[in-house]
Amino acid sequence: MTKKAISTDKAPAAIGPYSQAIEIGNLIFTSGVIPVVPATGEIPSGVEAQAEQAFANLTELLKAAGTSTKKTVKTTVFIKNMDDFGKINEIYARYFQGVF
Image 1 (cartoon, rainbow, N blue to C red):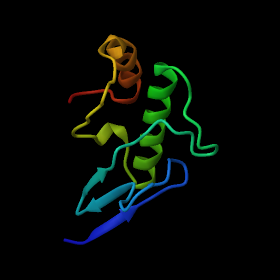
Image 2: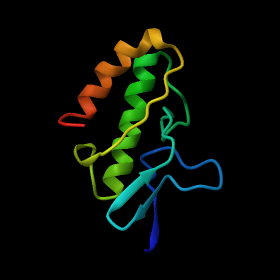
Image 3: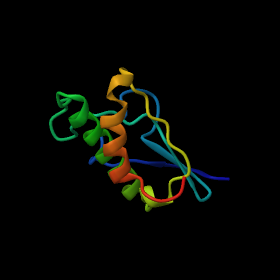
């Protein structure tokens, strides 16, 4: 199978020797998506703003790959403080709807 790198300037650029995403066959594998505002390089303050930015970045990356969150099979979200789980989960639910 052929691997194809996927990238967009609407999500933070890769800062190391990796791609924002890789397409293999009909699957897209994204790298860790961070809450950096692509236009400014800044990280918003507050867990809600950071979660919103990270999911917005991921959405743009999936869009660049020709897909969307509606076709997502698996996600992994790293949470520094589990007290923030409810806040992050509420934002997550707006981006990922349907059966998982």
